Amino acid sequence: MRCDKCGKPIGNHLIRINGMTLCEDCAREMGINEAALASSAFRLLDNELTSFLPPIMREQLEFSPTRSQIKCPKCGTSLKEFETSGNLGCIECYNAFNEAIMRLLMRLQANTHYRGRAPGILSEPITASREMKEVDVDEIGSKAESEEAQAPSHEKESPSDENRLLKFANADIGMLTNQDLKEAIRLAVASEEYLLAAKFRDELNGREGE
Amino acid sequence: MKWFEQVGENSDVILMSRIVVRRNIKGYPFPSKMNETDRTTVREMVLDKAKQLGLSVKVEEASQNIPNILKKKGGEALIFSEDEMVGATVNKLNHLTFYGNIRGSAVREMFSRVEGMVVDFENEFDMAYSERLGFLTAEPQNVGSGITVDIVVAIPGIVKSGTLPSLQKRLAGLEWRMRPYIDDNKFKRTATLFSLTNVATLGVGEDKIYERAMLIINEVVRVERMCREAIYKKNRLVVEDQYFRAYGLLKYCRRIEQSEALEVLSWLRFGIGLVEDNDTGITLETVNRITEKICKESDLHLHASSRFNEQRAAYIKEILERGDRS
Image (tube, rainbow over all chains, first blue to last red; front, side, top):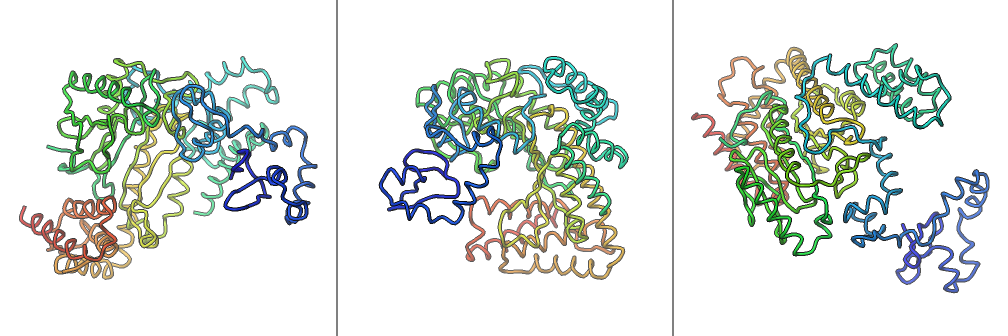
């Protein structure tokens, strides 16, 4: 939910006056008394919790008041409009709301990289054969290697481990053996890919349950 | 022959498969932000190309058999092939929303037809495309390949044997989603019709999406048949009883509610091909035809009115009789 006046997202403490939903700052500006503002049950807890957070995360919590006033320079769609309807106005919106879109995609698909075909080129005839699958995995592995070369920030593991994890991640999860899954969980945890590790763990647990 | 008149592959389990591919043309805002002139320009451009490709074009009204695709708004249009199996809507949510429909599970054939059509248009127009995100769509959740595969399955065996949770888990592992085909609280407990859809449009190539679709189809069909056989072997009398009761009810009812009809149809589907000494003469095709017609009511919001119960019973009877004769 967002403040009707400044458009900033509201956390635990929202104030409703005359049908308007306000954030704490705007309410104070409008002259609502301090006692009413301080009465939120979560207020103290909120302050305590945020003080524990590392500074970078605290910054992420503090949105700029102009956030919902961000508009696509080309078609004029506002961030608020996008958040309500879920639809974008033009190609430029992908740049204007990049942050929000990436967050949405990470949440829905856990991936933000396109691996499909380029425009105008018919994809290879689809075969469900085993060979094709293996070629596919290898290709992705090698692609990842070249990406890795460009971004040397992840140097936690030897490349072979990383490649193996990538292979597991891209392989059809149902085709992996229990042994593979255990190995994949270990690798994923080692490289701090907890989402991936959870996926493998769920699959493994599911199999044991059957 | 139109696509909806055909008998599908694996039609004992798969009712129909649908593919949607979304594309936008560079240089124009997405349809929700387009002005009248842009709308008309894009429409005319697309329709010209469609005519070159020998596709049929409809500017005003949608065909009866393609429900919910066209609502009246300026600059919208529909293009489709002769058998209406593949086509595209123009200026709906995206500039071009290609679709393919097929009875049963012949996804590969439909895929190559839809992709062929998409590529024809991609070669003609400069599409909104980014190296990183792929094809840009009006709804960011579909950005990337822009492809949604939707498979409607009837799985009474899996539901009744309690295998549903493990199927759901399996689908989640493949990044697919499962939801009841008719989204209504009334059917929550007895639903046997489900729609399976892919979630990922990023991180997987087209070939992978279809490979997974085929893997899922094969697996669901195999498991469902196994479940049906196992249940039949164990509770032969119960299944036969339910099957023949279901037939009698459908044939002789004068009023029937949507939920009851669907429940009864799921027993018929269950029993066809399994039940011995089957003298009803009812075919899977007839069952699927009735099911589809009943499902379509939800689109038209007819199911809620109790007045419609009589009409429903009447058309079920009519379809049954037609099926018996042929």
